[in-house]
Image (cartoon, rainbow, N blue to C red):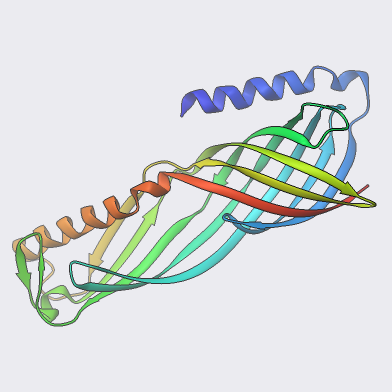
Length: 219
């Protein structure tokens, strides 16, 4: 992870080298949609090959799932704010590579309830012992991003397509119960097993795939 931040910093240093020789100018403002949610971006041209973008994304998606016979209803809440630096291989060509750093507020919140007696980690629990479970998963606060994309001008507008990886780190899950039996050792052991199971279920989200489609107005 540290190496990705270093790569982003180095790319930024390379981009800023030619800036002193010419004025920074606005490039575009646009809207985007994809796996990070819906968003907006503003780009400034640093040089014929480098563009710096400020980007904000967000969305919320509901879901339901079952783990150890406990039904969960929850939301995937996406929110990210950051900057990306694009390098275009050709001043007039469509292809570019990009690197960036984001403030990451992505999280998962869920409420779980048992329907009758369930077994968690080999421990049988009644519906009353389980109670209502409140789960939350968070990721790293500051995360790097790497991607590749293409931009095609169409008159005064521009179409942008980008794919990449958002390295948000291993999820950290908390799980609490409102049951009056929640302090019993066997219930605590079962809830910790359930928490670890939920954490394993969403482990793949530590590297989050990104596909974004954008429409921009060129200045």
